[in-house]
Image 1 (spheres, rainbow, N blue to C red):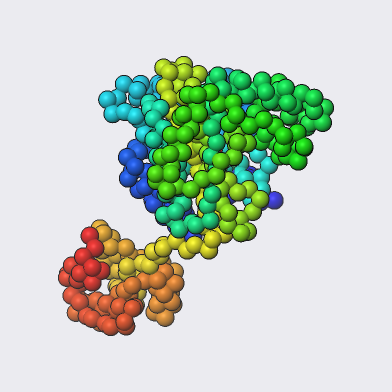
Image 2: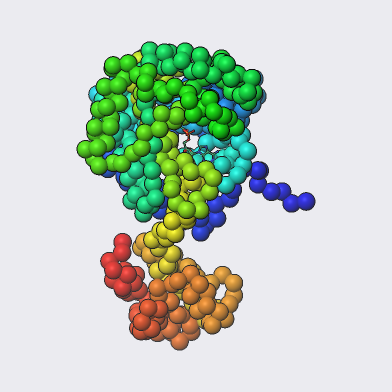
Length: 426
Ligand code: HAM
C-alpha cells in the first residue's frame, strides 16, 4: 500500500503555494508597516516551556501536544503555538535590554496540535502571529487588533467580526473565579467530565465548553465584566476608546475566555461571518499576557499579541470568492528545431536567466507545435524560435504571444532586447 500523509496534514501544491505566498507577503508587508520585525524560533522546545507558558490545565497541554523523548532522554515538544516560544526567546536573548522598546515581533510558521482533524482544524497548522513585549499601554492593544484586522481587510475579506473581552488583572480574575465556582458547584454533576475537573482547576474554561454550551447554568453564569476592579475597568475602557478612535467595530462577549492560560486584560478573536465558511468561525485570536515572561523565568514584562491560522485565512478567502491577483505568466519560452538549435538554446536560456529574465524551454523532445502548446500552458509572454536557418544567421525569432508580432533579433543582442520588451525588467 502506498504511504499517505499523516492525518491532519496537507500537501500544499504549487497552485496553493502561490496563494499562500501572496497572502504571506501581503501580511508581512503590513507587519512591517506597523514596524514589527520578524523572529524565527525553533520548531521544537523543551516540553516544560509549554507546560509553564500555555498552562498545565489547558486542552493544548493536556491533550494536544506532540511530545517525545529525544535520544538524550529530554522531553521535547513540537510547538503547539508561538507565544511561549517567542517570549522564551525574548527572555533568553535579553531583548528587554534593547534600547528600542517595546519589542515588536512577528512570526510565521507551522504549529502542531493533536486535535481531531476537520475542516479548518489541522494537526499541522500554520500561524502568522505578532507579539509586543515591554509596554502596557492600551494603545498597543488597539494597535495589535488593528493590525490583525488590516491583514484580513487588505486581502479583501469583508464579512468579519471582532469579538472583545477583558479578563482583568489577577485580583479581578481571582474574585471572578470564586464567583464561578460558587455558581457552577451546585450543577457539578450535570456538567461534562472535562468541566468537572475545570471547576477545580480552571473554572473560566467552563464558559468555553462546547458540550455544556446549552446548559442553563451557562446563560446565568456571572460575567467577568462585573468583577473587573477599577484599574482593569479603566484599562478596558481605554482599549475600547482607541478602537473607537480608529473606527474599528467590535462586539463585547464576556464569555470569550480563550484556550490558553496566560491571558489577562484584553482578549479578542477575529471571526468570519461569511456564509458557508463552516462550523469553526474563528480566524485569529489573541490577547494580553502580562505575567508570561515572569512565569517562564524572565523579568516582569507586559506583553500582547495574536495569531491567525493560515489555513482558515485561505478558507475565508474562498468562502468570500476572493481571487488573489496571482501572476502566473512566464516571460520567455524557447522553442527549437534541430540538434544544433537545441544545444544553443541551453546557452541562451542560461544567459537570459542570469540577466534576471524568467525562462523555460522544452525538455520533452516535443515537435514545434507541441512546444508552442507547452508555451501556452505556462502562459509565456514571448516564444523564441530557433532553428538551423536562424543559427546560420546568428539570429533568433521573437514572437510576442500577446499581439502575435514577430521580430528577428541578433542573438548577441537578445538579452538587452528582451529586457526592453519586458519593460526594463532587471
Ligand atoms: P489560538 O487561539 O490557539 O491562539 O490559535 C490562533 C489561531 O490559530 C486560531 O484562531 C486559528 O485560526 C489557528 N488555529 C489554532 N489551532 C488550529 C488548528 N488545529 N487547525 C487550524 N488552525 C488552527 C494562539 O495560538 C496564541 N498563541 C495566540 C496569541 C499570540 N496570543 C497572544 N499572542
